[in-house]
Length: 238
Ligand SMILES: C[S@@+](CC[C@H](N)C(=O)[O-])C[C@H]1O[C@@H](n2cnc3c(N)ncnc32)[C@H](O)[C@@H]1O
Image (cartoon, rainbow, N blue to C red; front, top):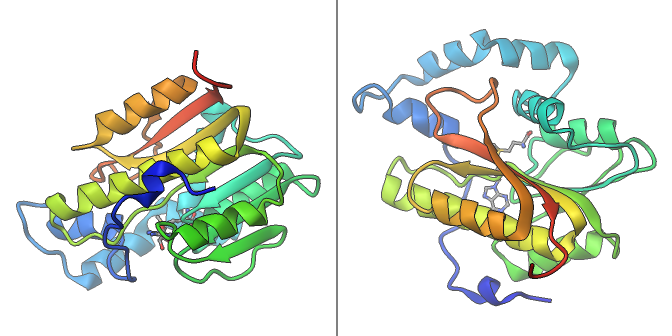
């Protein structure tokens, strides 16, 4: 089951510090650090944070996925969806709502996640082969319609470390998509503009017939994050 590139030397995983967005805050503004009080102020005045509290979503990230769905028509009732980098669960909530009771959502994260109704959760480091295998098992042999990855490593603030770590997760998400998606399936993957981005984009273009890069409104402008929406997985070499 393990694919060739999963045998590559493991890179440093993550262990629960700053998120990508927080790291961007710390390093923006000519290298000045914002105080955590400043970050909290910004967080709680953010319209998407406010809306997520009203709508009952666990994270503002839900609105990125909703926006991508509106643009690219990702979800349909009854689909099988794999959500990578799922905690705290904002994307899983959206996925479960949109696929409905006839659908299936498997979610995974290195961090624990409170249960989301209708979502099967696998906890562990996605760069581990055992975790990869556990995720595949959780799908119970059902080919997936959609793989959505919002994974982002802990950001150290050092681009030479953060960018390769982020792109590695994106490569692994693409690898998983190739393993579990049905022909015609879709991958949505968070990537960061910078070194390695073009290589992942190219790899997606080889595997999928339609690939676009999206920057949802809900994604902070200062963040280098964008989403690759790769649709219509090819059946084999064309
Ligand atoms: C931006 S957050 C995801 C937010 C989520 N999509 C939501 O809507 O609530 C990125 C997630 O990637 C996860 N992550 C980072 N590295 C990981 C790894 N090696 N294995 C599994 N999850 C990882 C983090 O723990 C974090 O929860």
